[in-house]
Length: 392
Ligand code: UDP
View 1 (cartoon, rainbow, N blue to C red):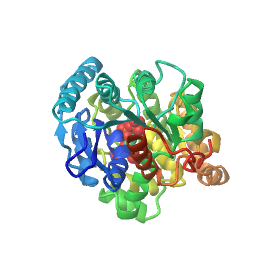
View 2 (view 1 turned 30 degrees about the horizontal axis):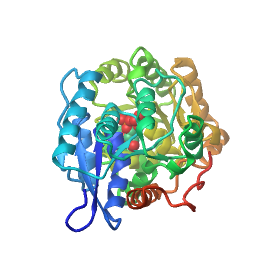
View 3 (view 1 turned 120 degrees about the horizontal axis):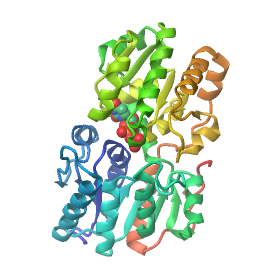
View 4 (view 1 turned 45 degrees about the horizontal axis):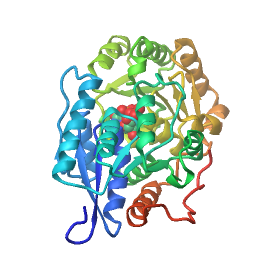
């Protein structure tokens, strides 16, 4: 829908913290692009932590679908977002819809756009584990989105290769880098403290910090307990280390973590941190233990080795680059790997200095240019030096 000033409206739909973090730089880049105007709709799939990110990046949603309900099912999120976003598109027509990653909100956004035959732009396209149920429901969601997307913004060449293998036409794919690196660089530049006085004092004193984040649905079934057990064991053996665990708001996750970790004196169970302070925590960490996708991407950029507590990863680039190690949820393996990294300075140094394969902080710019091309010419520019900037 061309506005009276000639600009085209580009709608962004997102609902969780990681989507907001990865979309914010794209919203900003589209805002800076001549001829385009971003409009943001949030589903509210993660309430408070989503608002924090929007506030940080100065994004005011045009509409908030406010879908979060206690005990919300995947069907509930999907149906609510599809109807709510569909109604929005009917009331306030747009020229393209941008979704990010692999949440149920993103899938609903792509489907609502498809129902109206609108171009769909998929940010962070092409990630695959090749296991439909791992991670669940993310692997399914991102494949569904891939089927209807017109522009696939792959963060790495490996992700682009996954799309090519599924017969996505090459002219619909660009390799952009991951927008989380844009957000991370922006945040680290501005933020000097974690805003948790205890943690800030520890960093200032040069104490070694192990940061842990755990939240994935697939880890609920015993996995979280195993990770917590391993971390508790290593923390007890290394009183000089401080383990910081900003807890995900999910009550299932919290109920698992507290009994195992509360009694350990050098484990600090913190409230979930706002994005910029969390980036500061990461930057001050010696090692990160995580099942989070975004954190796997951020830590290598900050030269922090990552232990990934998942069986599979759709981000093999960091493992191949030597910046991350995939250990699953076996408690002995997690404990051994963490101890090795704390004890073996050479190993730590080798992982910390591995190159980050996820981008250079300019992914959002490339995506905004490509959206402009798509909407003005109906295709991407033919000679495209934006492709191929990243190692796979
Ligand atoms: N994060 C944050 N505060 C925290 C923990 C994580 O802002 O207390 C950020 C982190 O930097 C990353 C994102 O949240 O960019 C990851 O979100 P999450 O682990 O919920 O999801 P995933 O990346 O696994 O999809």
